[in-house]
Length: 273
Image (cartoon, rainbow, N blue to C red; front, top):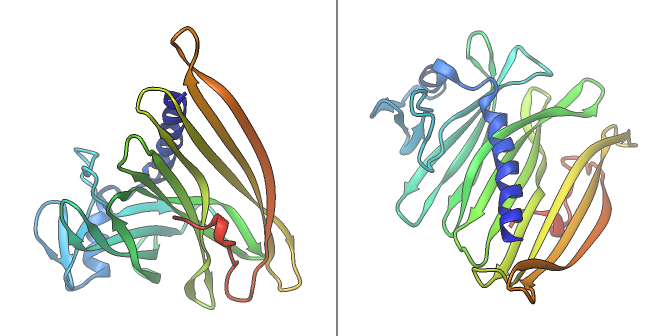
């Protein structure tokens, strides 16, 4: 049973990685950093330092950053002339803690010039629960006529084997009055957790949420309809010595998010850990 949970979680996280892989930075990462952060100094083939923060560009040959957080790029399909870039700005990095800001950029895809930018303070924190991936979600989040948002997904994973924890949160951003603004600051779209003996017996919980754009409300923005499926599973050793599912309970719930003038308020129960 635990294997089933881990396989499902691995599949979802691999899907998250696909967001970043499609239309990635390619050979432009270093040029983007040099143009966006004029004071940046190159300290290695894949690292820059700007104003005390370390910036890691993807290693196109290795394709892996060994748990560190490189720059992520994706062309915005709704506006293909724009390139979305997420820049982790790491200010502290040790064996037990990594922390820093995350800056989001909207660039002209042909010139790489910055059109909009938004710095999210202390968005990067890795300790007992670490960020496994940062990816763009460019589904068509139509907020209003002529205004489409893009998403950023943070996938997190806990370090405990007997108390497993995984979570993917989604935040939405849109351009309004020439500025990049947060319109939905974090809703959990996938979470799984559990407590078991490391062999078989234990309880596991899993929640998935999907977002769908609703009708335009009186404030001029569409409501966001959230559908939730929550599963609770108990596993135990059966009379033949095998590990099996003893009980399962699935529940479905729906929540409507309504734009509040600056952003969509998210109920506490739906917010990230």
